[in-house]
Each structure stands twice: as structure tokens, then as C-alpha cells.
Length: 462
Ligand SMILES: Cc1cc2nc3c(=O)[nH]c(=O)nc-3n(C[C@H](O)[C@H](O)[C@H](O)COP(=O)(O)OP(=O)(O)OC[C@H]3O[C@@H](n4cnc5c(N)ncnc54)[C@H](O)[C@@H]3O)c2cc1C
Image (cartoon, rainbow, N blue to C red):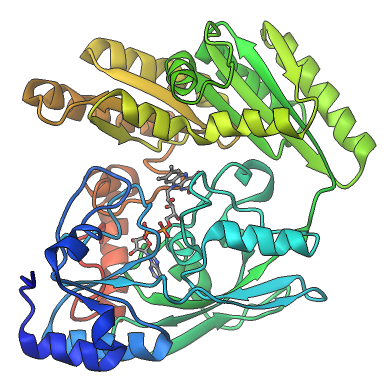
């Protein structure tokens, strides 16, 4: 059934740009693009699937002429409603642009289109003994375009940094349809305003990314993974900051509280120690075995001195996989526990991690709601996940209070509303609390300058 509210004339112009089979208007198709990984749902008027940058440029020019919104979308795994057409218009599905175009082993870079799945980039790099470090939990389903737009972090961010740290050059289409490029395939580049950084994290509001040159690093040859058990999550949080204070930089340093741990075990049956108050998962990596072993041993000592009741090293690849599988399925496992899950992304300075964990627990208790907490502890980034039922009006009122309190707690501790999931639609009401109305006004001026007709991803944080 075709029930798009775009006029037949606009739909026909879109079809003449991308081909009729790449303009989707049936309810069944549009429903598949009506949501992302968070709790929002808006049906787009149509879904358009361009093949290249030139088609995107022509779509943007048409959208400005005809005044309809365009919402870029990669894998749709975003957790802040960014790829959802909350003001109507078309969803621009970029997954047809999925070519790895070039890998340069001398310059350590890879050139990709925006619709390439992140895991394919990691795999291609590994085939060449290289590493593309950003590693969001959604790595098997998110796209690199979405990662750039959200400045995605992930499990290796503490040591290796986030997506922004691996961008050499971007090509993009401006909201008004012009092609532009920023950065260079060089180790350094200060040619003009840093539009690469402006685009990265702009959540599809300032341009559509069409090509990315990514920096790669040598693949670490050695790894040591370990799991430490703690009596409670706050002590585990202290242990995490002790690890960093000891001068160690684990590639990965994650935390899982008891509630989440039990939910994961129930879901994945991995033989996890469900009686532990919390787990800290750590991995050290590097190019020299002796250095990695030494870091692992020091990490072990610091964890025990910080109150761990036990630390176990992965003895082989299978045990290592089990550790990281436990972490990667955390959100999926929690999502099964109740009809509605609301995932937060608060991030605090490392010495405040333990305080933040205690605040999360208190907020859950005082509002009478279930919160499972896991996260990239080495980055101070927690994902308190509220488990609820959106049909329960009374509980949802308490959930709203709890979300607001979580945000306030993070800000009081010197942290941020979002470490990696972005603001999008869901966190927009909280952004002024962190950056102030003056900063929002500056963001709005940038948006108006680049997108005078407010065509690209309107109704989001800016
Ligand atoms: C199970 C799970 C685990 C996750 N773990 C992590 C994690 O560890 N770290 C982390 O940072 N995030 C994580 N996420 C969130 C999400 O995967 C990331 O934000 C990811 O970068 C989104 O990529 P995507 O391709 O799905 O983008 P989408 O959800 O499709 O879009 C996200 C935003 O990017 C914009 N966009 C997409 N493509 C383009 C483009 N080519 N040009 C311009 N704008 C574009 C969209 O308009 C939207 O605003 C997780 C999500 C899930 C479901």
C-alpha cells in the first residue's frame, strides 16, 4: 500500500534521481525505517536509497526546492533517535554506498563509503595486519557513516580514542546540495577550518558524509584479558580509577553490575559468576609480549589491592571470546527483561566513577525502578539502563524523574549527558543543562548558515 504524504510529483522526481525501485513508499517498508535503537517511532513519508554522492546532491537540491526534510540513516542502531524522521520527510538510506574503495599500506589509511558496516572495516584492516580501533558494541550492524555522525566510541576508546581520532579526510554533501571535502590523506592537515571535526558528531544535521579516509594503526600482536569479581559496583568503580592512576592504559576496561550480570547469564548461559556484586573486564594489548604480560600482572595486582575477591585471566581465545561476548550482549539481555528499556549514556571524570555508580543505585531505589548498569568504565562512561513498561503511566512518571536525576548527577560530578550515543531527539531537552543556552545559540547559527531552509535532519538537538 502506498500512503506516503509526499506529492506524486515529488515521488516521481525522486524516482528519476535514484530509480523507482529505490524509492520505498509502502507502509511495510516505511515501518522498517520508523525507529532506531532507542524508544522513538516516526513513520517517514518515504525512504530513498541513493547509490552515490551525485544522487544525494540532487536529492538535497530537490528537498530545498520542495521543502521536505531529509534524514540520513546508516544501520539505524543509533540510541538517541537521530535517524528517525521526527519532522516527517524522507529517510535517506545510505547502505547501498557500501564499498571499501582503497587500503593504502604505506600511508596506513583506508577509504570507504558511508554505508560500510564497521566490522567489515575492522576485518579488512586485520587482513592487512592493521587495526581500525573504534569498536562500538554495535560493530556488526552499525555503519561507518553513522559512526562518524555520532563520533562513536566503543570498547577500545580508553586507549585508542574514538571515531574522530581516526578521520583523515571526509567528503560530504551540504544540506543545500554542494559537494565539499575537508582534511587530507596526510598525518597532519591544518588547511582552513577543521570541517572534519565539525561534521564528526554533527548527527546528520550539517551534511551527508559520502566518503571517509580512515587512519589505521598496527595490529597489536598480544592480548591479555581478565575478569575481576567485586562485592559491589562502587568498589569496582574505584578499582577502575585505581587502574588508570597506576599508569596503566588497558585497551578495554568495562564494568557490569550484578543486575546486568544475572540478566546476561540468563540470556547467554556463559557460566558467569552471578553472585558477584559487579565484574570488571579488562584487556591489555600491544606489540611486545613481555610488556603486555607486565601490564596484565600489574593490572591483576591493582584490582586485588582495590578489593577484587578474585581475578581470572582468559587462558585461550575461546575464554577471551566468552568474556567479550558477555559484555557485548549486555544491552540485548537487559532489553528482554521488561517491555521497555531506556539506555542512558552518562559519562563522568574517572575519579567520580564510583560516586556516579552509587548515585545510579540510589536513584533506582528511591524511584522504585529497575536499573541495570554496564559501560565503558575506563572512559568513565556508564550505560544505566532503565527497565520499565511504557504502558505503565505511573511508572513512566517515575522513570522521567529518574532520567532527569541521572543527568543532573552526571553534570554535578563534572560529567556529560552523552559520552558516545549523541543527543539526537531523545536527549535534546537535557543539552541546555550541560552547555547552556549561549552554546545552543552558537550551534543554531552554524546550522542556519549551512542549512538555511532547515532541511537536513530537522527537529533534532539544534
Ligand atoms: C547493541 C548496541 C550497542 C551499541 N554500542 C555502542 C558503543 O559501544 N559505542 C557507541 O558509540 N555507540 C554504540 N551504539 C550506538 C550506535 O550503534 C552508534 O551511534 C552508531 O554510530 C550508529 O551507527 P548507524 O550506522 O547505526 O547510524 P544510524 O543510527 O543510522 O544514524 C545515527 C546518526 O547518524 C546520522 N547519519 C548516519 N549516516 C550518516 C551519513 N552518512 N552522513 C551524515 N549523517 C549520517 C543519522 O542521521 C543519525 O543522526 C550501540 C547501539 C546498539 C544498538
